[in-house]
Length: 233
Image (cartoon, rainbow, N blue to C red):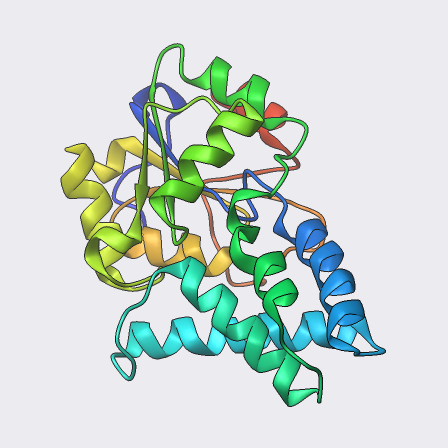
């Protein structure tokens, strides 16, 4: 349970999850999977996409659990794609490697992101914290006009959310009081972990994303960032 009732005026900082919350990775992965399938000789792009996502999750979870050594997120994305192709009987090549090399830099922002992050930054600290690599976050912000004061990558602590170290790192690096900080994500699992570290939480509904369970209790829920901005006025 939260220590105090939620009061919008007590929020000094906003921390955004990035991939899925500010940018749409699903569209990019579907497009790249179709190109990969064609290059690799695989007849079912959707099946390749699903296996690719599954293998990436497995690799990241192995790092979180300590069963595998940390590697940059971009490397895990590339390795997972190559393994997915191999498991489906496809052929890897220089062309397939090139297609996935910079996937994490190519996600388009959701339409509400540029305006909302700029508005929220007028009177609060705004940060992004992501499992993505720092170079990818810089390019995503530049391409999509994302307004934040700083972006943090969990690569700095060589793990991935929802490992506890990722949230401790965010608190320490920003010098924030989590009870006065709103953690915003489209992933209930991310918000649950953030709440355990004292953050106030806001769920943003994004197309195709996991929905909260009946047991989830977040401070705010909004259909998009424009609605969230109004709730914080």
